[in-house]
Length: 178
Image 1 (spheres, rainbow, N blue to C red):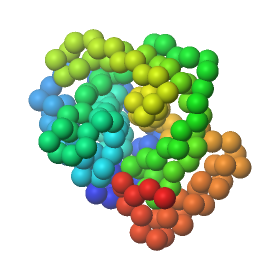
Image 2 (cartoon, rainbow, N blue to C red):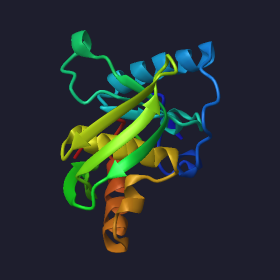
Image 3 (tube, helix red, strand yellow):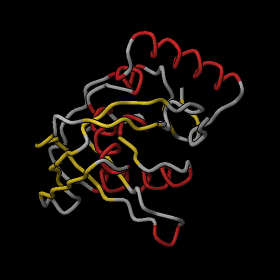
């Protein structure tokens, strides 16, 4: 199921392992532009290709924009977490594919990610205990078929799924939070 161009849970595409991107093509560049539009229109700060129905390892992230004038997501192709701290922090996360709820997720409080940009250049992104740190981990999870639900304990997962069903029944759409 999709809404506003975003694949919604429990769509099976959100549980798939995504293929590596072999080549940067005009079609990939068009997909990036489409994703940028969908993320902005739905007030997101990160979006992974499976969330728009494409099962490839592509992510866009912009955690700092305040409006259209400064909106400029960076593109991560085949991103990999290459460093991750053992220490963690908890963050109240939302997801465009699971609208209407936020859940407390425990994540590494430092990550380093390597990915290619649209020019084919290898880039490195590091983040510590902030929204970017969470977003990098959250979006890379999507590329491996992991949603917020899978990061919860069984009891918290049941509660979150119930809350999500209630939010959807109330008409929650991508970008809506609690």
